[in-house]
Length: 322
Image 1 (cartoon, rainbow, N blue to C red):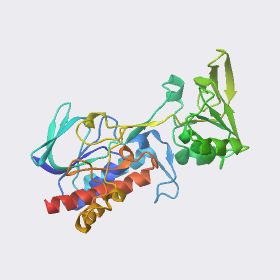
Image 2: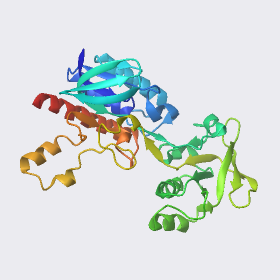
Image 3: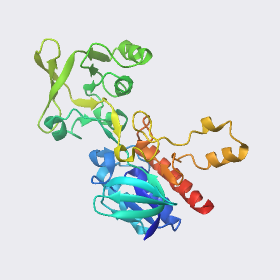
Image 4: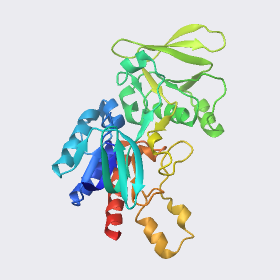
């Protein structure tokens, strides 16, 4: 069987793409990976996705998306892709146990937030531990929180959290920061933001909710407990694109490179029109990408869903013209 579209990934980008391709009567296959749903499945209450005035649980939102695409005939298989290649005009997508052929491909593998790897951190995810201030900051109104990290993301997250929290503490393992001078200065000038440097988190304290963090001084080795009601990780994200190396073009951080209209101004008018109709195109003709695997900036479910729609429409146009 040859599919019209194979979609790798099952978050908002992948399922939205599937919704549009299957409703366009394109035979669509979604390969979810071993952890279907992506980062939404690690999120409890989702209040910033339109259409849910009372909010919705992340896993429930993903489950509803899956039901919706299956209603229109999308096949969903819980398989993880290990290799992709182009054979003639067809894509060959290999999993651990099966191989599939498709005329087009949409990459929607997302990105994974980087965590400290502590057992206590895993236990308290969604109970005071978060990797997205934009997603979860609202739930920490009036609470004191800490942000772990030393780059621009940490400064941005801390500044954002001051909208809700009376005190935000940035914890960093060194006394020098990777953050740009302007972002660091902005955080330092905010009276609600304090800094703890030369500290690493040894443990996150609390049984059913976060009550503090256990810190180790990187210079003296001293151990201290620091009270807090929320822990926000801002130590980076890693796009789930390892298996795509050598297949599509990736940037230095591993994000899939997609068409950049600003780089196409010198092309002919006809070529430029083609670019406008394929903003999600990768370096491989017929392969498109959407969501957090291409987006290191916004990392929001609604943005990923919008890009999934774009990728589906680009794939449909590609099939029409080829």
